[in-house]
Picture 1 (cartoon, rainbow, N blue to C red):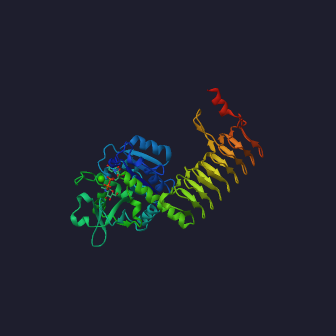
Picture 2: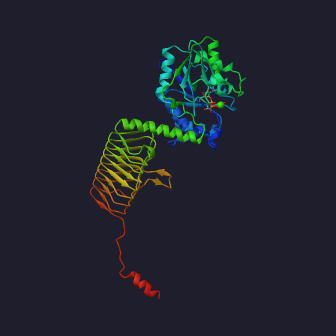
Length: 432
Ligand code: UD1
Ligand code: CA
């Protein structure tokens, strides 16, 4: 990208069809709000790409989410939702001196890729365009604005479905709702928009007509993968977007040599990398950023919650939950176990039913445990953080480990087994 690029994300709409108290853009896929996926797609263009998010419905919570998570994002309030053009107008004062490209996109299209945005900007710059509209060829264009071209194949305007004639509705090329603008030239458009249309709204799409009228160059750039512009309006759409997102990622993992036994019941977030010859068994749910090395076996019914780094040749079995767990190679955590905020060495065996108690409910803080190479933890033990179990140590089954364990020691904390002979008989006799 030759020029500096900034982005405006429209996120003030209510999302009535979600039937929710939560603003639409805060609904989540793999525990990340829709808006987060969009912001991150933009920030991958360059970490310093400044985003301006137009907020309205649920402004306070959207603002709080962005503040907490993203450094280069600022927000601007659209008090009344008078249309997409009016929404962008709220960002104009924040960009008054800006001289580069502005990307405009929506906060409810979480599948948009950085690659597409990059291609859009590249196309815009290479062809010296003033306004590039991302378009898509849709089998069923219902609901979208239609792209109207003249006989020279130039984009002359966008007509919203509600304003379209029967002939225009037959057009399959639609407006994806993503644009790249030469800001110096186009910023004046927002003062000139009118709302004399079927919805009585200030349409962003009218900047096409405005740019043509002012003899600026307007081009359409057609997207290859239509699913990227899939917008979320309902819970059904939310489920569909999750399905598209996970399937696309799992498909690429399989191409890279990962076995996914049953893609239908497996969920792997696109932020998780997995090495070749690892097998993911059914009903496994992996979200957040994780790294799983090659030759591992994960699941069935395993859950990774992010921040995990699983080394080569590890086995993570059924009903095992991992969170912020760094596990070196050839270690086994095979059954019914919770590992949270822990570092586990290589060749470690974690017995069935082990719990890493990482939460200090007094300080309300998470504590970390360390298990060194070659250690073995017996079944049903509780590792009470912060604690360190050193190399080759043994933790006997049913032990609560609250103090560090030296290398090669055996540690056990259970009370000795006591047996009372004929207890049942005696009891019954006494009760007669
Ligand atoms: C818009 C486009 C349409 C395109 C479609 C692609 C217009 C007029 N139409 O239609 O051509 O095919 O997107 O998905 O732009 N928003 C605000 N403030 C407002 C109104 C909307 O922030 O006052 C936000 C919404 O929260 C949403 C986005 O803008 O994120 C799009 O608005 P929406 O009403 O969904 O537009 P569409 O009718 O889908
Ligand atoms: Ca609308």
